[in-house]
Image (cartoon, rainbow, N blue to C red; front, side, top):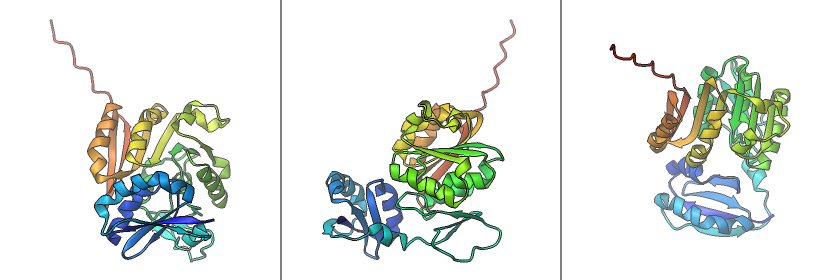
Length: 294
């Protein structure tokens, strides 16, 4: 199948940030070079993305963006070659085809990405995974919003969560997450559906929809998180923990106000490079002020 290669001339130090801003479900592949970042699209999708790409990438450009039609290449297979094992906190994440010796005293996660987000290479994924051993307790019920590969849900299950329910708008992510659940022998404790946060109020036939959830995780982007926060809050338990990532450090003030407006209190923050994550829990009501003596 032919693809359109979008060449974005930029500094290597900006590539991670550009990927965080540009990567979505219509990107078929990614390639990083010393002088440019390449994104690959289906020819039928690229016209609708041009304005967004040019506007978003403008502050990082060292030369004009170019678009080139490339004939018949399996970009997914080419991209998979770049996926190597990575150590994130207590977790060792590897694709199934890599047989590198696993270091001792780690929790192994087998993730074949198939273009779904969540390999451990992105800072936002690492920020979330670094907090999971602290935030997830034995027998917790977990919700993973925008699951991608399912890696966050699987990490939670590996450290003791009882069950994890996930959703994603992309059918490919559902298929990929289910395959990865099988690779990690977690199919019985993991379920995923296609949709937005509206699936939380829709009968999809999953008993795990009932909630409330002890842990809710969402690694997406600022505007998607702002839109779904009220729904996520409704399905949290009274002592639930909410983890958010896919956010830039510059998003911190906006997101803290969103949390405050929903009576959610930050309990953990972390940064890596330009990226920021936060965990919050329902705020403890302030003690009532005694009435003045008459």
